[in-house]
Image (cartoon, rainbow, N blue to C red; front, side, top):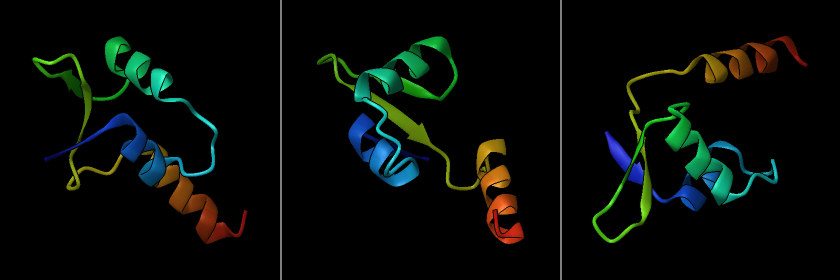
Length: 67
């Protein structure tokens, strides 16, 4: 498990989507993605490289089919 700042998470997972870091924080608060708030108030996204998300699986299937 590794932690990423919201902007680093966006750069890695959604590079050209135009999503803001506030959206990532809202996803954490809503339980859509795993994350935590540090003692200093910063938000971090928890990324498990061993798990493949359903979104990533769908993207891989679309890329494989040429969509």
